[in-house]
Image (cartoon, rainbow, N blue to C red; front, side, top):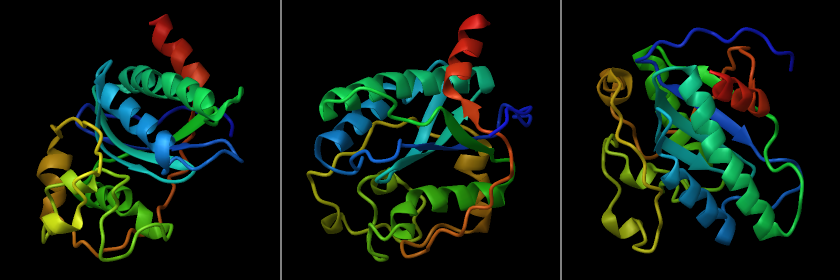
Length: 214
């Protein structure tokens, strides 16, 4: 994609970020790869002014809901998350080369409706891809610790051995209070098709250079 001007992001506006795996690599939802992603998310949940609030790990991509003071914080935070994770995954898989595409997509969340849709899309994304039953929650996401379910999933339905990355608590009005104006989430509520805004994706290498040059 051509590199165009980023849309303005205000301090109180969260971001929905999507990061995709390079083609032909093993699934991120299994075994040691999943553990590495969870560890990387925990280590980077609050770094460089970017806070990971929620996440969803799918076979070939990761969804994040993040809060940040500005785009410089996002650039540094994403580099701190993805660079060591890529090295760890390459070591696990015994390979060299690119792990993540050189760009990631982000969408600025500016309204309560957008915030609720983003929460539903991220937390229920496994159901969109057929990896999770409609009446269950995705254990490869932060859904087990989400406190906005209309009816909290029974404790018995969440295995005691399930691991959840350490994530930061939401602090923006949109992700704490605003989204609730449109009702809590149902456990069987499916994510709607995501309408891309057409905004450009950021080149990770460019993001790193931008962050270090300021």
